[in-house]
Length: 316
Length: 316
Image (cartoon, rainbow over all chains, first blue to last red):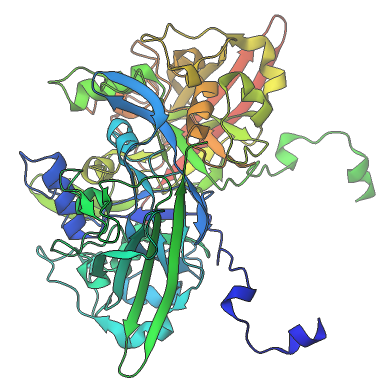
């Protein structure tokens, strides 16, 4: 034991990483504009892809904190109520999906005061990668009129390191243009977007190595995390240490950059080809492993976020 | 001090009641069928009042736990983003409302297992009265497509006593007929509705005594609390001790039985008359006090739930 204590570092195989913080509040935003547009195109083809409020309000909803898990936790396929043709059934989801997101943990209470976007890092401690596992068939049936509920609450996975905003300071960038101009409570004087590379890989149980199926970047967020937090705090709610806020699915504008199977397979119409085995995928099958990584690339150095990984197991 | 310790009981004026449990999860269902029908009639007049999923799924959404307060906590009118005519503004809500609900606290973890409706009281510890304060103008603008968010998260008030389900055993009744027959995971062999009288009163700052504006009963819930919990647990999410589940607004079928100002004033078209002062109300004004009480009436005894009370203060 004494020898162990003297070691300055441990090989990754020697340690078991745990959830950095078990949050009380888990909130999921919807700030990936390409994701929101793709979903609109698929499900409301007769309308404009984005709803009228999208460029005014950083849309978000409350998620379930009790099932926020650390990377590596097995994901059991959820059962749930779904509409199949004319029938309503309670069965294992057939449209299990991942969502590529980033998240930030809070380090300091707001005590119910508003927070300006420029105060972001006075409250936000650091970032993690988030996989917001989703059951699309359950979601489609339950979400009107009060939003996603059981389709999302069975599991959410986060990476085991919190990367501090101090470390990310060199990677702050201007975001995409915002039109119309945001209301004053959402305006910042500094750039609050980040240049962080994102990658998702999929490995079926027949494959020997994962295949990259999505490359994206946090710059594809319409609303910055600073604007998300300012919006969340704007009604006087109490922001608490340990709160976890996720960005929403971060898809890029092009094929190969889509942060969910729903988009990558265009709701099942364009199955993904697994090159090693010739298998195809629309949604996730039992035995599939999804891994997400993220990194900020400096000149001569890289800040890594580790990974968030999870394997799908059959419904119990 | 010694004298105090020997006392067997204290006058209510001597003590400060506190939040019975500060929940980690606060979930709000939508099981008041008359409320859901009224909202449908007001906001989707061209459609059937209930959405197609209503009689299949106990609809619910995750709320914010950090702003669950004990009865007596002052309610500050929230600011928020709203659409006013053609303009999008960030201003104090002009449509502040209450929602008459009951809630149940969990006493035991599910560890991710399903829960059958007949197992309800093995997990649920007892009930409280819940006022789910709501800002209708903020809600209307933000809620598509992911549900209510900041319109609800500024404050939720609960009564300070948890009334145990043991005490409520004599008040279990059959609920209203459910058609279509619920899926098996929502079926119970025992009656799981309750006969609990509910009352809401309003007192403006000019009035000397409150006026009752709503009389209702928990029997007006379509889905029982046992079905709500079975649904919540059905996807494998972890039910935790301290979780608070609210029923949704419990309106009766007739005028005088509506559990929100939205319904009582029919979205402002039929202002309520305050008889003592001749004032009228559509939504809540600063200085208004809302009090909710609940009781189960036995033969020769009453089980009281105390009250949940709150006074509206101007936006800060």
